[in-house]
Image 1 (tube, one colour):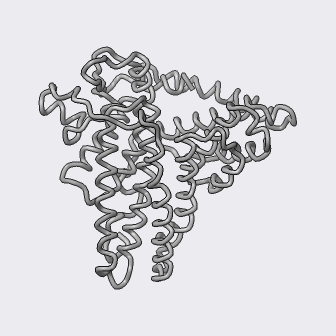
Image 2 (cartoon, one colour):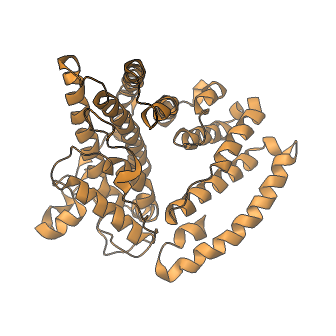
Image 3 (cartoon, one colour):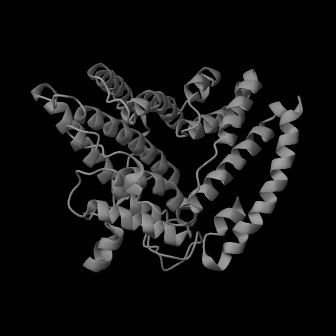
Length: 372
């Protein structure tokens, strides 16, 4: 993993190639352990499968390839095979949470909700609660996408109303999550970049908003929540737009509420970009002293935070930004700013640029009266 992540600049690209040989060796040893009755239930084996899955995601993102999902599916099967071993220690429970977190966002695995029963309540925290709640998005999309994307048959009113009811139920449950997070998980404003020249500030900051978080991991969890909520709003708006006749006053409030929620969530994502990326524009995952990161005006950013932001900040924020880029009804210039941040991340980590515009990855969510 270290070689794959460090190979994120032109001068170190050979590290990524070298990582493939180590990946091959690890794959052989892990496969052997999975087939062994004793080794297959050990924490070390499940950790190895998770690392292989993470490696696959990093390479797929860097090279704009589809994720096969084979290691996600394998991790779920291994967790179910382990049974009661998942709750024997805090490490085991955390590994189970890691598996559930990964597969919740996977388009290939729709059984993440089934893992809730295997996790001991004693190890529940804010992150695990979000994972459990977000698992329902997988069920929602598995139900809604085949209906909304069926080009041969336009959805019936009953199907659209069913999606809207389902989406509303999932959103209501997810909306309770922010009220359960620890106090130090809430973000706070920073004025670190106020001194930058106006033109330079616009490269790194949207609408003069810079938010600080407890650490880079908490920021990523918040953005995971925002990405999940955005997907629900998109499905809601698309379904409302496909109702025939077009939505009347009974649905007007829900349309306006969803559009306003989209804007709020995307503003929050944009506000976290400086915390994840600072003023970095090139140079791979290593920290560089000239890069500025947000501070509270009293203490300088810690070395640990700078290193984690430099190494992982872009990987954590790129998917939320891609989800945000799919929205249409944003303020003038905001979508362009988001796309420039995605390009900045691709440049920093030498991620190959996809041929297609990231906004084309999903049908337009705000499409009254048609498929968009």
